Length: 282
Image 1 (tube, rainbow, N blue to C red):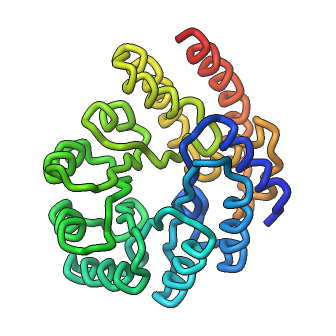
Image 2: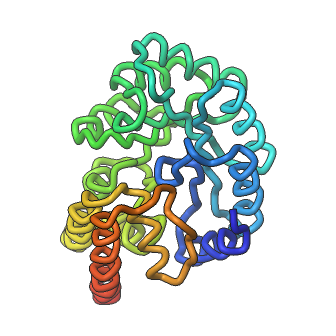
């Protein structure tokens, strides 16, 4: 990890006015990142956040030992909560996932947020998530990246006054989630364009539904383009366009993929300019 570039990136995000940052989600490509580098990122991030900004840390890993090791390190560095994604690769029953989440939260004894990421890991059924948040002392909310719009009302209704933290994890649902009463987002798009999700959040908070819808349309446009690339690669390219040296891609580029990357780099530059004009015009 290039710590200098990473610290500059954290400073860029913090300076954009976000309420906090999250490390170790899907966009970070955590399955291929060494545990030592993930710990170094946690330490560097905490030192570069501004007063009052929260640190959340995803602790997904291939072994229970590494999950708990990352969680312990995150809390020792001052994390407000950790995100617990489900096991990947092999398929498990909902009872297995419930036992796993319960064990992790009881071992750490600190705020744990479920991280539902069914595109890449075992998916949580809504009833499993609700039962865990209701019954486990240290499971205090969820980052829902399932993209299922019906979950917005289901979880908001099940909260019923409880102190759950509900975070939208799929950028397609940002405006709808905020309007439904969800608390915020951990956004992949915000990894390179924090001003857009933040603008949507602020528009909804101000009662400006039309403004939120207008900004959400930029997200929809972006997600169409994202589909041509692995999502983390698209975020990396966005950061390169904004002046961050991101290093090589994790896999060699085929000639076709190289053309996709070049085309996206040109497109994203123009898209960012349009986004900035729209935000400035609000």
